[in-house]
Image (cartoon, rainbow, N blue to C red; front, top):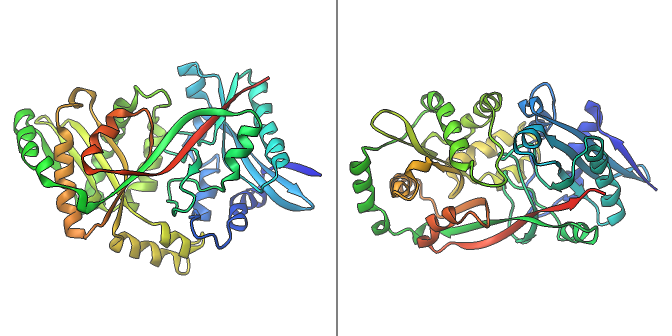
Amino acid sequence: MINIVEANSKKLLKEFVKFPFSLYKNHPYWVPPLINDELETFDKTKNPAFTSAEANFYLAYQDNKVVGRIAAIINWNEVNDQQKNKVRFGWWDVVDDIEVTKALLEKVYELGRKNNLEYVEGPMGFSNLDKVGVLTEGFDEIGSMITWYNYPYYKDHLERLGYVKEKEYLENRFPFSNVRTELFLKANELVKKRYELKPLNFTNNKHIMPYVDKMFDLFNASYASLSSFVAITDVQKEYFKKKYISFINPEYIKFIMDKDDNMVAFSIVMPSFSEALQKAKGKLFPFGFYHLLKAKKESKDALFYLIGIDPEYQSKGVTAIIFNEYYTTFSEKGIQNCIRTPELEDNHAIHNMWKHFDPVTFKRRRTYKKYLE
């Protein structure tokens, strides 16, 4: 018998967070999150996502053992502002038993029906800065700190339950040796001169902070045309600013400004923390912090996390400036591999931006959709 319990206490939420640690124990490609970081994400008093969203967290038990988990989420900005009558599911992990998946998803349907919503989509988090998608290709590749890993049967469970593909995401990579300076070196100088632009580089995170609000405003503007986009709120900006900026190497954050000090482009790159997080085993102490700090300083893999360009400057060659700045930084750091985090398959603008570096798609993931009955 499958018993579904709402994780509505600190003890149960901790079980919710720790279940994947047993499901993927000693798995070579699963990257564990930091336990306290995950608990903060689900804390309605700390995560500002709950100002515009609601979520319930559920555990599945069989023979008094946890065999699955799921979060049922409504992003009310998405429902009210975009008229997308959608209930989301995320943080879904399960043993290979479709009946467990079915029982967990029924709790998502209940939340959707209760609020007169039309369909369910997932897996996805509260916002566009959360993890997204079921892995469908690339099971023999190590995950990252900003993606979910899953077993191949996850996709099969959803499809057997009548779900259809909604959005496809690609993860691409290329060796730094593929980068040819002739593709951007001359254009970099021409574009800077023509539009009176200047790059901003940093060596200290404190100097970045005064620009972060402008960056999030530009993030909202540059991604607004994507069908899946939900804008980041002012409260979320403050949260992400405190939570993530200090975690990133300051030299990996690039801003492009115009003559009036308006931001026209930004890019955030992170070193790969995958192996460090595997060694940390979900905890910063006693040794996790050391492994993460070591990766921050020494990782030879760079993950392109976010890039945004003002719509007025798109297709004007601003990427040449960004590439030039990173080429200098990556050369100094000895970076060997450039990895792009999940990008929508139909985001042709972003794919065209990288095509000259001969990237290879090494993972695919997707969200699935089903109408509520």
